[in-house]
Image (cartoon, rainbow, N blue to C red):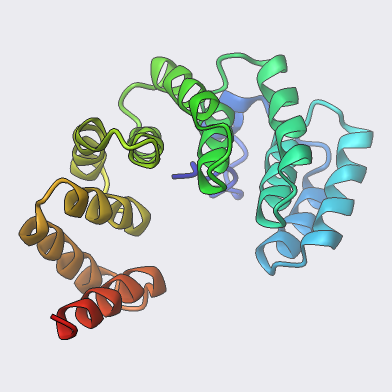
Amino acid sequence: LYICIGCSNNNTNSNIDKDINILREPETLYKLAKINFDEQNLELARGQFKEIIKLFPRNERALYTRALAYEKNGDIENMMKDFEMMIDADPYNSIALNAYGYSLSLHKKKLDYAERLIRRAIEVDPGNAAILDSLAWVLYLKGSYEKAYNYSKLAYSKDQDPEIVSHYYKILLKNGYADEAQKILQQSIKDNPNNENLLNLLNHTNNESAQL
């Protein structure tokens, strides 16, 4: 799971800004680029982030969001370059380490490296639910279902974000805990009735049951 950067844009003294050493000068440029990113105007957003980084090479928020724009477009090579720049500048940047590893896992690329990145993030921020979820997911993709279950269960106990629930649901099924999987899915849909990913999981389960 990704960790949100810039969720508290109105608070210029937020801890996240301090933690990743964001430069404040290009704030207006960043907001314009982020609007395009959020609206899926990815080519325009990437160009705007490129200009920000040209003017302010150490702006980690622009690098981070441009990396995610590359990921959404399937440009894994350039995504990796941006994340590598971030972790070269700060090897203890748990947000970048986690996002890098999780992005690789989404495309099922370099899973061993993805696991190492995420484990480095956990060393920096061991109680973070998003990072625990990322590790659970990469372990699941590598076929280590029991280990994935342990991390996913811990992540879920800390945060019932729909994406964490989605991963936990699939991991529970792989470990033979179908009843628990259905229970957590139903509860999450009650809490997030418009979440398309959760509803798709429910529909898929219902379709499979109908074929039995």
